[in-house]
Amino acid sequence: MMNFIENLNDEAKVAIGLIIAERMFQLIDISEDGYKTGREALDSCWKWLEGEGIEADDLYDHIDSKDYIDVAEFAHFEEDDKKQYAWYAVLDAVSYTIWQAYKKENSKFVPQAIEVINDETLIILGENAVESEFFKLESIDKVKKYLFEKYPVDSDLKNKTIIKKDMMKMVDNNGNSSLSTTNEPQEK
Image 1 (cartoon, helix red, strand yellow):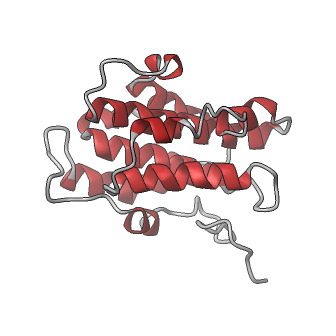
Image 2 (cartoon, rainbow, N blue to C red):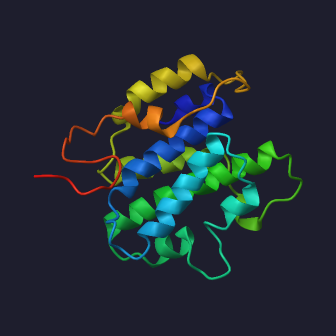
C-alpha cells in the first residue's frame, strides 16, 4: 500500500508522512488540550522540511519533553479510538521527521526513541491512517505524482524546497468537502 515511498527521496518521504498526519490531525478539535502541542509539532516539522534550520534536538522535544506536555503523552493518554489514531499519526510523522533530521545532521547518536524509526514507520503510519477509516490513500494521489516527478529517490533538493502550502493544496478531502485542511471552523 505505501511501498511507493521506496521511489522517493528522504524529503519527499517526510512530506508524505506530514500530509497524512495533517489529514488525521483534523480529528483533534482546536479546543482540546493537546491541540496546540500537536499543531506546534507539525508546524515545526514543516518548517524543518522547508529549510528553516530547525535542529533535530529541537524537533525531538515535541515527542519527549521534560514537562511531559508532548505528542507522545497525548497519544498515550487519548481514550477515543479515532483521536488516538490521529495522535499516533502525528507521533509517527514527527518521529519520522526527527529521524530524517538526525540523518541529515550526520548525528552518530540519536535519542533511544528514535533508534527504532525507519521507513517502515512511514508505511505503518499510512496503514494505520487507512485503518482508521478517516483517511483514504487515494486522497494523496496528486501529491504522489508530483513528488515522483520532482523528488525521485536519487534526487537532491539543493535548489528545491517542499512547501506545505503547495502540498496541502493537492490533497483531496477524501471525498468529504466539509473537511478543512487547517482545522479552522467551517461556515454552514
